[in-house]
Amino acid sequence: MKKFSQLAFPYVVWVVLMILLPMLLILFYSLTTQGNEIVNFTFTLNNYIRFFTDHDFLMILWRSLVIAFKTTIICVLLGYPIAYFIARSPDRVRNTLVLAVTLPTWINMLVRTYSWIGLLSEGGIIQTLFGLQGTDLLYTEGAVLLGMVYNFIPFMILQINTSLCKMDHSLLEASADLGANKVQTFLRVVFPLSLSGVISGIALVFLPAVSSFFIPKLLGGGQFFLIGNVIENQFITVGEWNFGSAISMIMAVIMMLCMYLIRRVDEHNSGGRKSS
Image (cartoon, rainbow, N blue to C red; front, side, top):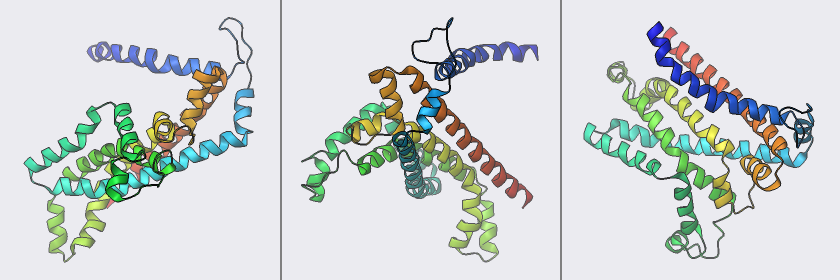
């Protein structure tokens, strides 16, 4: 036990310094007025009241949640077939395909997003190949969605692929022996067993998507504001750190609530499989 405590000590220090203290500082700023010092401050809820009574901020929050939801759904619909194909491939091919999915994540996300500006711009490759001259592809909701799906779908694919690879394939043979066709086997055996990977993928896609700020900034061109852009604007441009901190805390609560719901769904799914 003593050895475990010694090994855990550096991680505890890291969590306190890098996570707990910054969160407490953000909470402090969110509950104080602008210009307050640590030794002389006044508590207030005005920052939170301002957010929840401003229709524009609420609409931006709603838009962010909708975009994150759309991104997650698209990643599931596109990522599951890809992950299924990878999991069913021979080992050598599977490793190559996993590397191909992972490879883009080695490049900085900002650089990857910048590349889509050239692809979607007027006279770019996509317009030329598909004959879409005169069609606005850049600085639209579709461009933001495309950028988010492109950046986050590898996490969905890898999570689902991992759950599919861990699956006991003798269950597929048993299902076939009992007279189930491929569709029935997938719906009653494969998908339920891979649901934990889907849920993990949803968490890894939805949470960063809902708070993303540079993807909508680059591909939305400042015309498509999400909640992450509002937070960035409050800290960097406007200089209202207190209000920006309040929005950050609201987003932190929303994310923790989402994580709790995802965990409960995963536990319910795991319990259902054990009982069956």
